[in-house]
Image (cartoon, each protein chain N blue to C red):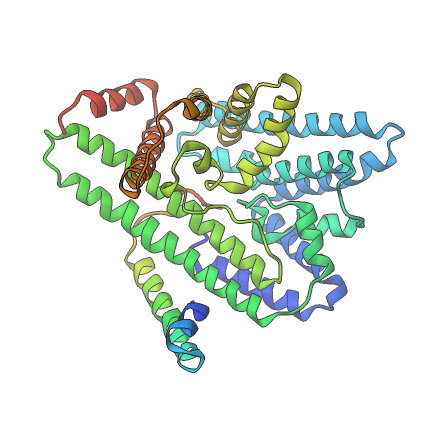
Length: 387
Length: 45
């Protein structure tokens, strides 16, 4: 099933209508019931996994005589579940089916996203940072249809804040409609048409002897497609949430116009990078007092969240080392001569944006190619081939 | 978009212009969706 379909739009419109037609006190439960129905129809395994996780995450820390060990055991169990499914996908998918049909049967829909929401809830509960709430509120948070399947990974305190002040607001509803429209425009026009259809046709028309240019443009096309598709989907999800009167964390903020790789990661998949900053980077830095190690651990966590594979490990290390290099440059910066005047500073900003943009585009080669030899060949072509 | 147009052309003219902008976007999306042969890959549910 695709987001770009009348079927999905039907679910969206039906959910919004039923939600606002319901009495205000039970609206979040009506939404949870619709989400459960949606999962039961499209991914029954996911419906069971999410229901079990919801009960355990809420009640285990509360009923256990020793909450702290129970919370950490639960976090480890969720991580193990995620790893098992992701590793299982690779093994079973490669063993039985090249088309990915088995993958869809095995992997619970949206698991990567709601597993991280559960871990966030457990760790915030441990810190005592959660606002007062009931089990029904937590159910409403976990079974929140707009973000259930592919994020953004929103936070419980934000959800609870919106729930406690929930009311109809025409302006919010109108902004939601606008975001959904912009999201679809991004997916359909910029992603599906421009990056997936028009750009490949343009690249195919280039003289084959200019192999480096072709390989570079192919990485660019891949990166733009990922961005337009995912940012478009995030806009649809954020718009859908606004239609229900909830504000959800932004996921993208012009990432390709950032001046350094650290800024890039604060504007690309913001909900995931923010989650990893809070629950991977901060603890690693707190324990080791080493920000470089923190950056590497964070980027590896982000990479492995996407896929348990060597190519994603390399991709994570590439970005992690990029951030480490930037951190070291920041330390050395005071000793460097200052750039004076608007022209020099403008050139420096332009150069920084171009450098960051190309650093990111070249990283897509790592995850774009199917095999390691293909990846190495693509890099060799870009750096030594004819432009 | 409405806020932007209201600042540029005034509140009265902004409402129909915003509506026109939305209709234009919908037509554009439907046109490209029908034209499109590429699958929606990244966010496939």
